Length: 465
Image (cartoon, rainbow, N blue to C red):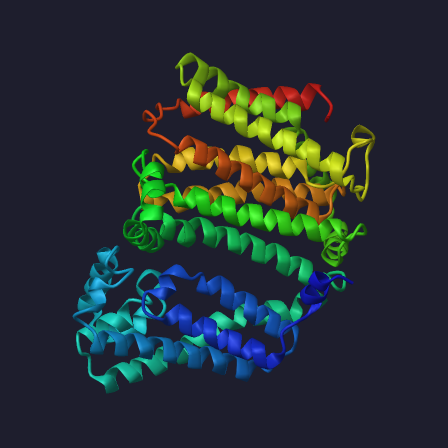
């Protein structure tokens, strides 16, 4: 068993799970930080793991209760002691509307705002801070804090705990698939966080961007490259960081996969899970996605858009799209030839084709990712994360369909995602190298209908390739 498989097979002890729930509850309730952390998702996942391991429920609720009380208490103390300086600190310095929203809520509900705010997502991490800044009496705050936390803790912990306590028995899932599920869930959450909170921090108004800009101004060796990269108006730190992270992760993941010719432990777990999940309609849907995501399918999807760009003479945008598709196609072909990893199952139309990386997954990541990047660039900054989250939601079914029809291992999909992100980042870096004219106003409905019509014809009349 490899070192990676050994680490993945480890499970958290009950004590660590209790500490994890306490930490999540505290961070989720902490001033401002809770706005940036998907606390509900994390605490549900941790509570589910605790339920699966039969951790005593009173201890779990107690940990969530203690974390919630501590988080709100720290937020109150911060507002009480530093009311004059907290508004000048990140992230309130960039988002003063958060403070305004919390102040209006506090003015409306008064001393009851601490209790009510615990259960209202958009203002939950703000209200204790506001209460401290308004010098609410400590005794009054403590009473509201304790009572609301006592109700909040079981409400948030019980659903995940019951799910974890009963999922093996109720759903009759195959044994030893937990780490494959955790791996996929962690990957999705990591991508969501990276393309929302992470991307915001390296954007033009992000904290990381400002910090690097200050360093670049002070160091002569960095000043010239920084100015050179800012010719388009903004240094493309987001694309640069994505390229570095994805390239490093793809290299490390590929080395790990290639050092173990046999499937990894998580590959076998995922295969067992998806063999159990297979139903006729899921298989049919996955075969349909196989035709949508192969070479002919991708060509038919992008053909109307390429033709329209040619008509409006945006050759630069068309060339970058062609560069992205050509680049990922070449990398997939090279990777399969060099690594020659056998597929779990090889249907007739895939005879002679190898498994790593998943070409369907990597190509789909490039198509959806490049589209999302250009769409997001036309939107206000606070709305861009929704475009990326939608792109992740569109990409996941294509990737998982390869497991359902049994032609790839889970590690093939991971490699395909990372490779696709590398190509997306490189193409975006080249695009942002200099100033570009504003993107044209796309006739979205007509182009989407054209793609839908062509892909329907391709699926109906032509076999998969």
